[in-house]
Image (cartoon, rainbow, N blue to C red; front, side, top):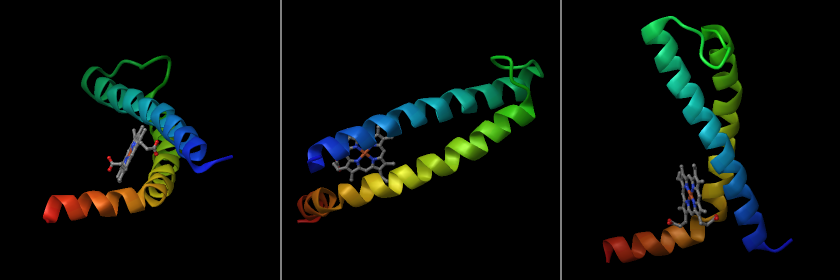
Length: 81
Ligand code: HEM
C-alpha cells in the first residue's frame, strides 16, 4: 500500500472515531444537564465509551501527525520565514 493510501485510510478512521467522540461528548453534556439517558446509554456507559474512544483517538492522532510531520515542518518554515 502506498503512503497516500495509508494516510487516507488513517485519516478516514480518525474522522469516524472523531465523530464518535463528538457524539459521546454531546451525550455527556446532555445527560449532565437533563439527567435523561442519551441514545439508550446512562452516564457510566457514556464515560466507558469515552474512556475507550479517547485513547484510541489520541494514538491515531500521534500516528497521523508522524505521517504528516515532514509536510508540517515545511508549513512551519513558510509560517515563520
Ligand atoms: C478529526 C481528526 C482529524 C482528521 C479527520 C484529519 C484529517 C487530515 C487529512 C485528510 C489530512 C491530509 C493528509 C492525510 O490524509 O494524512 C490531514 C493533514 C494533516 N493533519 Fe490532520 N486530521 C485530524 C486531526 C489532526 C490533529 C489533531 C493534528 C495535530 C495534532 C493534525 C495534523 C495534521 C497535519 C500536520 C497535517 C499535514 C497538512 C497540514 O498541516 O495541513 N490533524 N489531516
